[in-house]
Length: 286
Image (cartoon, rainbow, N blue to C red; front, side, top):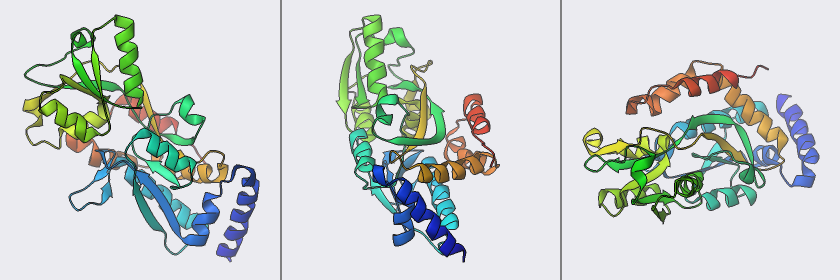
């Protein structure tokens, strides 16, 4: 009986969203598939493990969303299909075109992106920083002058770096790259003085190296405020509600702190007051 009632509700949701061509829950009910887009090289949020499986903090949150959808739709099981997405444009386009249902990586919420996609509740908060070699560190803003810095093309960090350079009239050359692995390769081969990205991303990249603490340093000050969330199709309000319900339930429980510990605490990154506050403020009741 529950499956029949749920199916009727989903069909009603789909009709309400018909003008926007978004009916994620209806498609999941019909196919039993939930399609997750993920970034393959953004540890500890989203990456492939040694066996090639998608893992990470964001992946764990999206699996929780998948479990909630399975239960709410009355499905016996749900098949999660993973699609790797590298560049920011690929990730936005995959959501717009309906190639994936949700993007589970490390995406900053911005108004310009909200012109193309919707976002769930926030999932993490970090800030931009620059990673350098300890032998020639960049400690703060003033030390950027004259340096060549690698940064992912099309990201909020690129925008931040351009604003910092312009505001301070620095002679800084940006080397635009297409992946985190490329940024680390350029840094390690000394082709750039620093690699700029979100602090959360840099932590993950650094601690893939067993001798990280002796090799790398990070700027003392964050250059920006970066709130992360999951990208979903625009206008699909019922899917967004179900995803937010899953996240809010998680934020109300102790499990979110265990997930944080699994993916950040083991890298030596304690739970910051701002992330703790984000969990508490978004633990929305039913």
